[in-house]
Structures are given as C-alpha cells and as structure tokens.
Image (cartoon, rainbow, N blue to C red):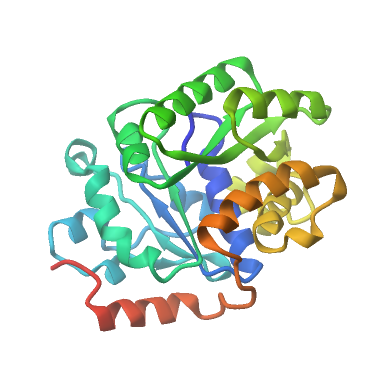
Length: 278
C-alpha cells in the first residue's frame, strides 16, 4: 500500500483494513515497511515490541520474535524508528524477511513509505501488486499518478486505488474519471470523517472505536469486496467486480472463518520451519 505524498491517511487505511479483513475471516498480516516513520502500530493501538526488524535483519532474532498480536487477531510486523533503520534498512531486506509470512497468510498488507524516494520505488520494483491511497484533492491525485507511472515502468500491477477523506458528494462521474486516468479500479471511497481523528485519541482502529461511523462503513465495504463479493451494494458492483476479478485471478477466493488463533498458529509454524534469521 503506497501513496504519492504523506498525510493522505495511508497508514490509517492499512491498519483499519487489516482489522476489517481479519474480522471477516481472512488470515491477515500487516507489515510496517515505513521504517523512517514507523507509526503503523499507533493506528492499531499496540506497542511495537522489544524486537525490531533491525534485530531480524542482523540475525539476532527470528522473525516470529518480532511479530506482535494486533486487535481482532491481526498479525503485525511493526517497525521501530531508529537512526540505523533510517540510514541502513532497505526494502529488499524487508521483502526477504517477510517471504515466509506471505506463504501462510491469506492477505498481507505492506504499509510502505509515502512519496517517490528510494524506498517506495524499490518497494514497487519488488512487490507483485500495489494499492495506491490518494486524497480527493488535485495535489494528492497528481502525486498518486506519479506513482502509477513508476509502477508501469517496473511492470508492477496496480490492483486499484482508495480515495481517502473524500467529500460525501463525490459522484460516479468522478470515480469513472479516476479509474480512467489511473487505469485501475477504485476499490473504495472513504469519506472525510471526524471519527477517524477521534479514533486515534482512543488508541485503536476506528473500525473498533467507532464501528458505526462513515469511515468504518467504507472500510468494511472494501473488505467485504475482497472476502464476500456477493454482499456488495449494487451501486458499487462495477467498480468492485473489476478489482475482485484481478484479485481472485491472482490469489483465489479468501476462505472465511479461518483467522481464529492465527497469531498463535503462525508463530508455531514459523518456529517449525525456522523461518527467521539468526
């Protein structure tokens, strides 16, 4: 998950979408690959833990030692901001570490850095698919389009875009235009919602602290589009079906009701496989 500029709410979307997907039965892992900011754990309302990506990269710990159990059985691989990680940690090292996780999870969300610096570009070069999070303002859209061009240069598939902090009256014509210029489906429109800011004050995902809010409703709709496409509202069928076709063609259907005790079983499986580096 990437964005063309900071401040569009990418990490908020990543954290809440991970929780919503896990609630719906998908074995979900979310990785904080933004080692310069390392804030994803804040949106999930958890502490990053004593072991960091740095420790795993240096061979001082197994990957399972760095995992943290998040809300609703989400498995989190958090980052801890340090001068070392800002100057030394590279996306290829992170990708190598998380490969064993990808083989076990139904869905892995990687919260990448914002912008077009070295880290986001390297991430797009190495990842199979990306989701671009943008705001509805012209500056955010233009920044997102730059990422789209970079993704095309690296032959990285754009599964779709999520428009965050959108006005309530964002119409179908605007959505169709966005799909045209991004050459990718709009996965969801997340409205401007005061609950998203209040959720941070309560230290937890908005889908849990404010489950009936417009923000939570939008996130749940995106998650339902992945896990239960038959339940999506008719007004969004065309947009969501185009995304689902691409997602399911590559990854298959998500099997529901399988996320229970995922954190425990994942750590056990990694321990058996000696999945970390030491």
